[in-house]
Length: 389
Ligand code: APR
Ligand code: PHB
Image (spheres, rainbow, N blue to C red):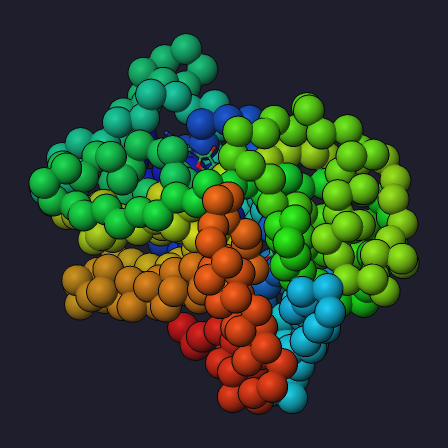
């Protein structure tokens, strides 16, 4: 087998990159470790920046999103007493779009099928070789055979646990990491949202987030100790804890119901530099993870893909390697700003086990500053709606 760009990973980063490259006449093959049903059963975040939506439009995959997505002009930060409205439209002229990552991934699969792009599911034991040669080779097992895929570039879009990043020799990469001593217990329920905007709530009992997928489907999260297991949280215990952490009005308006999904996600900040080694280029969770508090994970994968598709098209269509050479630096500048924002949101809203009274006072002061300073709110809004690509 031969292709121009071998893409490892059929998540949003790999699929969107493939779609943009195919539309520019560049050939791709996607290798995905699990089945399509498995990929499409994962419940992930659901906030898209305007730049993300623009790129989906130019990739020709926005028809359903344009019909079904919700547009939100702001979010609420609360500590129970204060309800601080961050008015994105007034502060930045922009807004955000609510559309599940799972839906976006399904739309991308449909578009890629229409393009006829080969997507090999349940491809195992992927190994990447000859990254320093003119052409590289990806070896893998599929359908009982060992296969070789020869290519000019390898795009590592295989998430945090993927093989691509680890292919770069340890001495050639640098990792930055911060883990947090708590996770988010998330529940998806077929109930109307308790408020018309997202609510990021901090309280003495810990953080809670009220989010949604549609007018009839809600997504809620509560901060829990990292050692907790989702199975140990009954629906009733979840709703009770959520109610105690939300501000009074939305807590009273809360409709509870059967949890159709319940899982715990750890919180982590992680960056691996650089994003390129020879013919291998990394994008999305393969290179970086943000805690979900800033809703940046998916959007950051999309901005990587924006820079990377331009770079690959330049190299493959015009023989111009400048974009490939600058890809890592260009993407990392935006990645680090999203890292900072996600970390700041996490620190402003979560309670740390065993923390002192000073830590809680700092959170109170940060929220008070948001309430009283339009400049502070504009800074938050500018980051939340998304910095320019
Ligand atoms: N070989 C082939 N595929 C692999 C391998 C491997 N060795 N390891 C992992 N994969 C696949 C995973 O099964 C997954 O489908 O790579 C895909 C990576 O997808 P994501 O983890 O979704 O990562 P990415 O596409 O970068 O999406 C960005 O933003 O909101 C965040 O974490 C959230 O998934 C989201 C991410
Ligand atoms: C979600 O709806 O899943 C969601 C929204 C905002 C976040 C994180 C997750 O910051």
